[in-house]
Each structure stands twice: as structure tokens, then as C-alpha cells.
Length: 549
Image: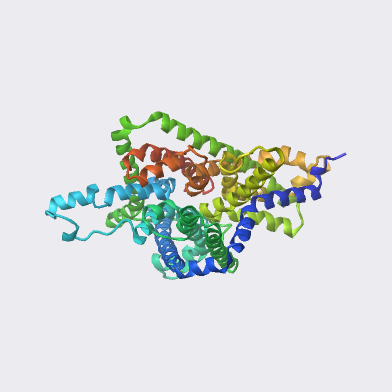
């Protein structure tokens, strides 16, 4: 007799239950936002909302444009041209992805602010006495934030565009050249339209990361929805106002996701040739080769090499003053949180993806995909949505314990590692679920039919058939979740227990106290951990492209 969990109905119930559990924060935001009344919303509209809308709009336009230009240009040069240093640049262009936005912002604030070495050297060279004698662009501004985020987020576009360019049919480009089209026109008329859906996905990911960014905006004093949610909750303890801001942002993000997917749905014109898929590169020489290499070096130098070099230098200068016990404690906290979340994320993501695969019901598929939207939501939104229901539960339980037994139960969910891990799962479960879903998509249904014909139930099929086939995908999912938890800042700041810090929160704390050099060891550790998915992505891309690439 089969266990109930092996039946399709039990898998449906199990998948729906998981989806509802991790969607709990978004329902709590709806309830809290509705409890604030009309005055809160009117106050937000008349005070901070216009500024949030304006800054958020220009940030998305600026970062979208910057990542589009850098990502598409570099991916085209790497995929379609040959020049000295190209093979080194193909993986080096992914390196800025290891830098969280708030860390590169810390570095450039220290480097470019008025008292920093750049402006100090300029004043020394030209004899300027103060800032009234010269003009220097403000790093702490919307333009500065756009520049920082573009430098670390363009690899999303580069990676997807490069993959698409390599998979395009070479015969189409050859035909274009035979018809007398130049290289530039072949790119604009053939290659770019075919790659448009992938490029749109990359730009959308970069813009989502921009919406979710907290540390960079806070350091640069740029007021957006994300910083507004944090200040409304922690500055004024206005839960309804923070919830209404969160819902406004969620509506905007959901609408943006819908537009992006709808646009891709209307653009199904990818072409791959079964005759020839290996591209013939245009060989560059002389000044063109130098310009191509210089263009590819620009984002690598300013998005990775320069800030990484400065962090190493500052760490070498300040390591004697570092409290090693504090560093190892923070590193241990980060590793424990990231490890637990990665394991649970892979486990729940695998089960949800498998339950969604088995189910024939639309509501199960929609519920699973609802959870996958968590990655698009900023950390403060997730943290607020998690904190509200758990704090209510703790208050209710404490009141019941006092009235019934005369003892106080305290807050045994709020302010603990449990609520922090739960928030991480809400935020990053989409990574594990999406990777598992992609892995299952490569397994044909005939394999499951063969397993059933041998008398194996669903659980046994998952354990003995599917898991060995998607083991690599799940390891990649665990790695991505692990690194993202290590870098997560706003949710950790809002939910971390008392007297508890991670690498990210300690580095941010040093930065807010203008002790940027003292934070270099913490920042450098986060960057080094962030290099692991970069190495994996580059290796995966090389294995999936033609051997003579």
C-alpha cells in the first residue's frame, strides 16, 4: 500500500501548503496596509511619494540603459570578434557580478569624496584651496548610484546576450554579408533582433536588482521606495505606512514583470540552424583591436579590479587594528545562515518543483510561481511582511501565557534566527525552485513512465531517478542561494537578533560610521565568496558552447 504522500492529490496539497506558507508575508502586508486608514496613504502621497517615484524612475531608466549598453556591446565583441586578450576578457567581464552594489559604493565613496585621495591629489596638483575653486561630480547622487549599479549589474545582460549570440545561426549572418550588408548593419538588423528577448530578460533582472537595492541608496542618500519602507518602519514605527509603501512597490514590480513576460511572449523568433551554429569571428587588428580590448577592460577595471585592489590595500593597512574575534564571529554567523538557508532552499525548491511537475491543476502551478516572485521583491518588503505576522503571533501567545499561567513566554519567534532564515527562504526560494524546474524540464516524461511500470511510486522515482539526473542543477541552486544570503543586507538589518551581526551588516555599520577602511576585510570576504558563482557561470557557459569556441 502506497503512502499518502505518494499520491498526486497529496503532492498537490503539499505543494499548495508550501506555496501558501512562503506567500504568508505578502498576505500580511495586505492586512496591515488596510488597517492604516486613508490618512496614511494621503500623507504619503503629499510628502514622500513623489520623490520616491522620481528617484526610482530615473534609477531604473539609468541602470537599464547602462547595463544594456555595456552588456550588449561587450557580449558582441566577445562573441563575434577576435582580438588579443579576448579569451581573458570573456570570463573577466563576469567578475563585477561578485561585488554587491553597497560594497562598490563604499569603495568609491572613500575614493572620490571631497576628503578622498582623488580630489586631494587634484587640489595638490592645481593649487585649489577648496571645493569653491573647482567642480567635481557628486558621487552621492542619483547619477552616482546609476553608475555604481550599472558597473556591477551589466553582467546579467552580458551573460544572456553572449549565450544568445553564440547560439545564433551563422548562416544568417553569412547571408547578410553576401547581400552586401556591413558588420554594423548585420548586427543591427539580424543579430540584435534575434537576441532581443534574452537581452530584455537581462535588463529586467538588472532593473529588479536596482529596485531591491538598499545599501547603495542609503549610502548615497538617494530616497527610493526601498529606503522609504525601511525609514517608515524603523524611523516612525508606522507599520501601515510601511506596508502601503511596500504594496505600492509590489504592484509596480508585478506590473513590470507582466510587461516583460508579455513582450517576450510576442517575440518568438529565435532561429538556430542545424547546419552550422559555429560563428566565424571578425578578426580585429591595429587600432580596432586596441579599442575593443580597451572597451572590454573599462567595466572590468572600474567594476572589479580597482575596487578589489583598494579593498586589498586597505585590508593590508588596517588588519592590525581588526578585532579578529569579531570578524570570525560575523563570518561564522554568515556561513551558518547561508548554509542552513541553502540546504532548506534546495530541499523545498526541489519538492515544490516536483509537485508542480506531477500536478495537472492550474492552481498548483500558479501557487508555485507565486512563490517564485519572492526574488523580485526587495529585502525590506520581505522583512516587513515576515515580521508582522510573527510579531502578532508572539504577542498573542505571550498574552495567553500570562493570562493562563501567569508567566511570560517572550518573543520566541521574532528576533530569532528562525525568522531570519524564513525571510531568506521567502526571498531566495525562487532561485532553487527555478533551477529545479529547469532541471526537471530536461527530463522526459517517458523516464517517469518507465519508473512507474517498474512499480516505483512518486517518492521513489524522485529519489532514485530524478535526483541523480538533476544533482548538478541543485548544487548550482544551493551555491546561488548561499552567496545571495551572504550578501543580503536590508532583510538582515531589519530582522537580525540583538547583538548579532553578519559580514554584510557589520560592513554596512562600519560604512555608516565612516570607517570604510576598517570594513575592508569584511567586504573583501563577501566579494571572494561572490566569485564562486561567477566561476561556475563561466564554466557552465564554456561547456554549453561549441568546442572550438
